[in-house]
Image 1 (spheres, rainbow over the protein chains, first blue to last red):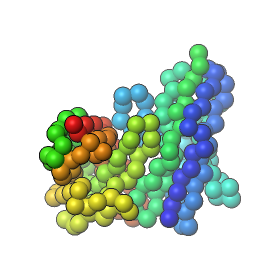
Image 2 (cartoon, one colour):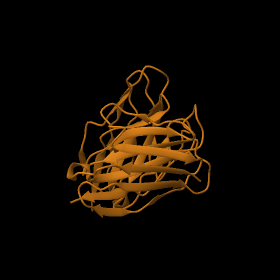
Image 3 (cartoon, rainbow over the protein chains, first blue to last red):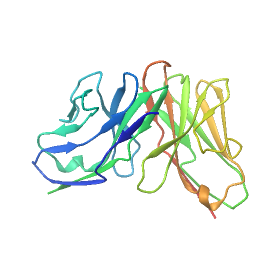
Amino acid sequence: AQRVTQPEKLLSVFKGAPVELKCNYSYSGSPELFWYVQYSRQRLQLLLRHISRESIKGFTADLNKGETSFHLKKPFAQEEDSAMYYCALFGNEKLTFGTGTRLTIIP
Amino acid sequence: GAVVSQHPSWVICKSGTSVKIECRSLDFQATTMFWYRQFPKQSLMLMATSNEGSKATYEQGVEKDKFLINHASLTLSTLTVTSAHPEDSSFYICSARVATGTSGSQGFGPGTRLTVT
C-alpha cells in the first residue's frame, strides 16, 4: 500500500522567512512525487513534480529516497503563498494524497 | 493542457433521490478518470478509478452500488450518487489523466458540492 504523510496540518510563517512543508512517503516501488496547491476557492493545481526538478513560484522539492521524503521549500515566503498544500504520490496507477498542510503567511 | 470541467458545481437534493455529476476533459482524451471525495478541511480521498469502456475500480470501503461510475467516452465520466443520504454530503472532485503507465498529465475539476437534506 502507498501512503503519504504530511505531519503539519497548519503552518504559519512570517513574510520573507523560509518555508518548509514536510512530506514523507511509503511505497515499495520507484515513486513519482508531486506537490499540489489549492488557493482559496480555487481548484487543485499542480505546483511541481520531482521528475522535472523545476522551480515554480520559488518553490523547490528534492526527493530523498533514503529518508523517503519530498519536502517543499521556499527561501522567502510571500503573502500570496498562503494556501493549502498537498503532497501526492503516483503509484499503482493512482495518485494518493497526503492530508495537506495549510500554510499561512503572516504579513 | 489537462483542463477538466465538472457539472454541476453545487447541488442540493432530498434524501433518497439520486444525483449525477459529470466530469469532462476539455482539451485531451482521458484514458483514466478518478473520483475523489473531500470532507471539510480534510484531504482528497480516492473513491474510484475508471478507464474508458471498462468497469470502475473502487477503493476499499467505497460502495460501488451507491456510487455508480460510468466512463462512456474518452472525454466524459459520470458519478451517480444513488439514494443519497445526508452523510453523502461532501465535495466531490474528479480528475482526468491522459496516459496510463506513467503519471502523465493529470488535471482536476473544480469540484461539486453535494448537500443532501
